[in-house]
Image (cartoon, rainbow, N blue to C red; front, side):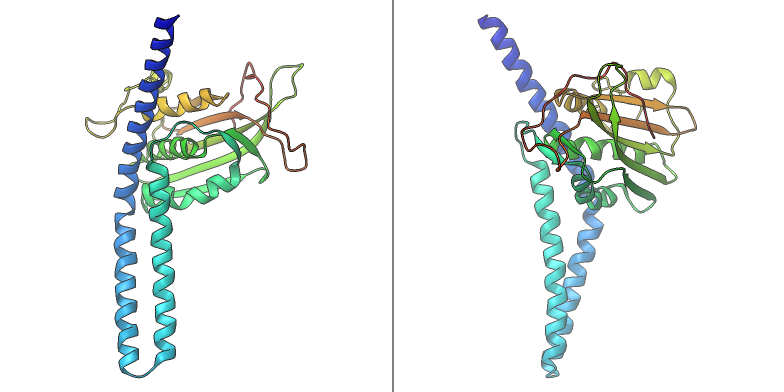
Length: 273
């Protein structure tokens, strides 16, 4: 029993280390993507302050005040972005809680767009804004970001990333439990059947050396499974790829406020892209 507990503890520690390593790799992608935006913000703030100083010298305090207000707004925007990055990168154990899917994704879209670059178009559609799941919000964002980064890498000439969320019912005839499906679809090169089959294996990657660790999909898969859900991939060469995360649905606001139950997985999950 002692050996089993030691092995289980070592496994949990290894999984936590892998999660943090993958998160820090994602932070590297984030910071590379938003460095240009930070430079623009800093340049804008500097220019506004210089103009405000000129207006003060010209004895135009009202103009100076409006310029300083704009500079303060830009500072607040930069501070909010920095706060989000720090919250995203910090090391922590999984802290699942009831989470509104649409609100979480919409709040994270700005960082996703900054990370993937201007040649990519990101669209988000939500069937029901009230849908909730029971999961760790930071790990959810980490998984979503990695799926979007993979989609970006599959479209070297640019394209569209479509994020969707909708409610789905179990395929079991006697089971009407509800699930929430979050899909990330791209218009990229797609994958062959053998690549798609191995895509969630740790350290498996088709990217060039130094371009990725091969942990993104495997960590997303592990997080979804740990949250009581499942992850599936559909892809065809030349027709893009769709990765779907399926989570047990939490209660809607009109339902009971009790803690959401975590139902078992459906035998089959249909993919909707």
